[in-house]
View 1 (tube, one colour):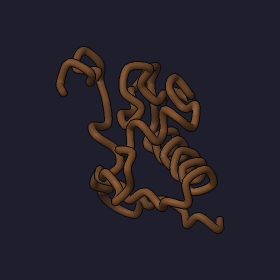
View 2 (view 1 turned 120 degrees about the vertical axis):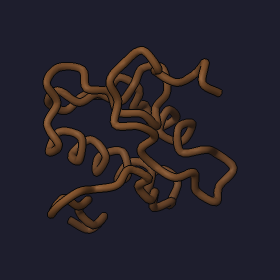
View 3 (view 1 turned 90 degrees about the horizontal axis):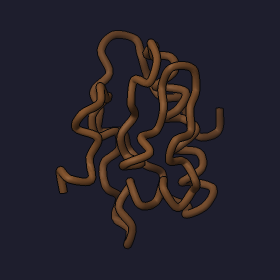
Length: 99
């Protein structure tokens, strides 16, 4: 499994828990076309779609915006509300899917 992970990059770790679905979170996000998708300095790993890489000075807001976009697309395509696995510190939170 580690061979498929971006171990040589600075990442935010595994972003979403695997849902109760036939696809893992990573495969679901890959099927949504999100590998390599970027907001600011944060990028969904081209190697494993359930990892967000710090591609160029990513800020927490970049990663959260990318997570929100990934979660929105997974919900639209599969009807699955992905639950984040990363822990937020302070007042950070993902917006609701209706936001």
